[in-house]
Length: 121
Ligand SMILES: [Mg+2]
Image 1: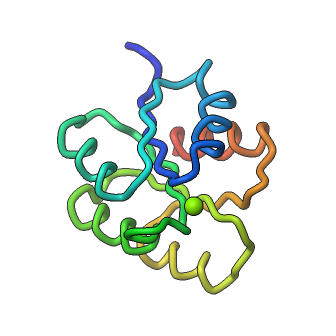
Image 2: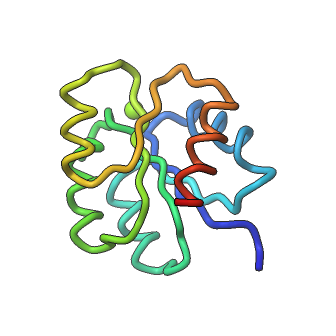
C-alpha cells in the first residue's frame, strides 16, 4: 500500500507546484495542465482516488472537463479549484458531481483537510 494517488489538473505551473508542495509528503501525485491530459492519464491509471481540477483553463474549462470525466469515471472524487468565489459556479460544479471546492489563494491546511476528508468519505 503506497500513498493514495491524486491527479492535479491546472493550466498554471505555479499552482501545480504549490499543490505539489502541500500534498507531496502525503500523496502520490500526477500533475497535468489540461482536461485532455487528465482524461488521458485517467484512462491509463485506474488507481487514482481523487482529482483537483482548476475551473479556468484555456482549452476546455474545468466544468466541461468535470462533465466529461464524470461520464467515464463516475466514482472519481473531484475537488474544484478556482480563482474567484462564485456561488453559481460552485452550485453548478456540485450539480455536475464535484465533491468539493477550494478558492485560490488557498491555505495549505485547507487543502490538506479537504483532500483528507474527501478521501475518507
Ligand atoms: Mg487556470
